[in-house]
Length: 313
Image (cartoon, rainbow, N blue to C red; front, side, top):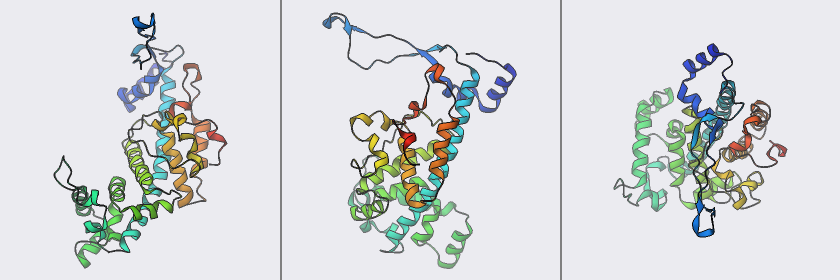
């Protein structure tokens, strides 16, 4: 690795940390070209997945500044994503509290208002239904809240608080878990308002976006991360901006974060059609991604589909 300005490099290492930066120069390192041969096929390469260990040497032309530029790009990317996720989280709190609040002001306490698998099915690892675990987390959020509106409601009306009050202290994970426990018709009703027919698909979106939020909130590397919580996808043509990820051709793309950002953009269009978020996101990818072509690193690493920049953002 070429280190042009040693003093500046040391300053970055002291402020950002070696291990955080090393996550960004990982892809700059060389890998072995080892491919095992199969004696049964006359010495032809085996058709198996080959693990290619990363070497200590870097690809020719790699500089310390390359890693720093990628880190800065990723930092700004996380801030953009958090901006969208905040809008999505707030909107979905309202959707959930309105849908359940129509049935009962304390609906979140009522097992009969949720799907049986959530409300009564015993979990092998806890011996309790998932609803019980959710209520424990909910109680903790209520108990820790020092918001003025929460103190006012507790003092004036006591506990429990109405769902339209309680929802304001839910985090994304709490909200996502509660949505997953809704009855089918309630899931579908909320999903339909976002142009998604299947509420179970929408529930998987929320789980994936919660994962995305946690990555961003903990300042972890995002741009080329493998997505652990891959979302389900709607039928071809239902959400055109996601069509590139449907089917076998989209298998690899579904494991990268760009898909989740496309989901964010789809939801943002429903929540606030006049939002500039999509345009700002496209501009960031188009103009701020560092030129790393000399080491074979491009936006493909984050899972962009062909023609992504030609779509309306």
